[in-house]
Length: 534
Image (cartoon, rainbow, N blue to C red; front, side, top):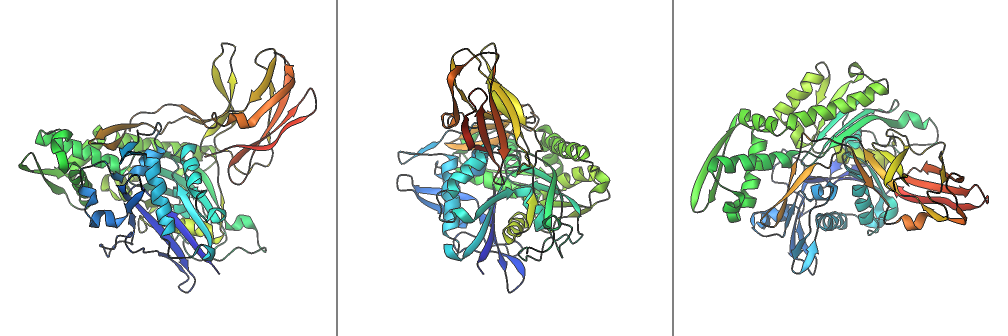
């Protein structure tokens, strides 16, 4: 039997898990030169760091070797950290020019993921299934990027993608059949929440991985997503806010730091982590031939987070998930466990904020770094996952004033694959029209792309605008709409129903359309894929 693997590509760290048939348990895979094994209390995670040694040749250094070789302290534009944020953020930050070649965060992410896959200590033919994860807060653009990376690797037909926080629900060892769990996934780049009902019939949600057989009902082995929400905010934002506070107290600017910028950012990250257990920490650094020592207390850090809208954003996402859950008949008292994932979830003030919502529930925090990868491994092993779409999707049309608007055709919360197609009758927007295009827009009523991108010495710095919230519509396939044109022959007339379009979603989240001409009876488009939905 071949290997089953799960990979969690994270903003700060990435984790690879494999199912061990002999141990009958999941294990975190260690890759020499990539995995960090310095802390024996932590699993061998791969730091999500990439350094471009030669931009033209594409030579890179990844993972823990970036730190071992001191590349994370170099003051140049070759180091990529938090590049997953740049992939998720809309609009994306400007690419950097390295050795005469432009490198974007998507390029860095592509090189990192491909390098991770290439370094797997298994032959491609020996891998049965590989599951990758994606953040709830990301737009379709992230999935499109991830799919483009997958298309370039030999494992294409063995790869599946699931939500990170939903995978984490499967990764925790909850033994209660049918338990309703809230996954609180708060890492370096995103805050993702999923309310999931675990399978009714399995020995242990976080354990036994036997391939499903034909006997028995599939629904008994299927985890059901009840509600989910996300926002682009995480530990990397705290690092930036803390760095700004340190500079303020030292009466310095980022430019005055010079070569110390990257090193100080790393020290701010370490200080943030230390303040989860210590009440104060001293941040020491040098700049302009002077030594500085700034003391930060936990209370001061929490006040800094409050001032930047951190807790407001946190409460808003929890409120959104619980609102969706109530619409589906699930209330706070129905939740059995709150499962914490990601380093930011371990902060005392974050747990205290959650405690205000969920006072009598069992909070689990024993797998903050591996639950996502291990849950992805559950999916790889054959357990089903009944999921739904987190955003609404609309079809673009032309108003009488000549402006483009979107009419919702797929509402938020729709399950997939769809049982019945959504039918839409269309007419010409002007007399003599000879074709109609099908442009799909993703509608988010609580936009997550509120990230300010600044540049410090050639490096992109992402800072979440935590208090901002608004609707956002992202056209998904406007550039490819020429591939889904319905030709009108004879030309259309205003006021006449001319086309019947049937939209359906398959099990790969592809929105497909079949178009029939009501006047001629001809099928103009037959089951044409328009876009992959989030």
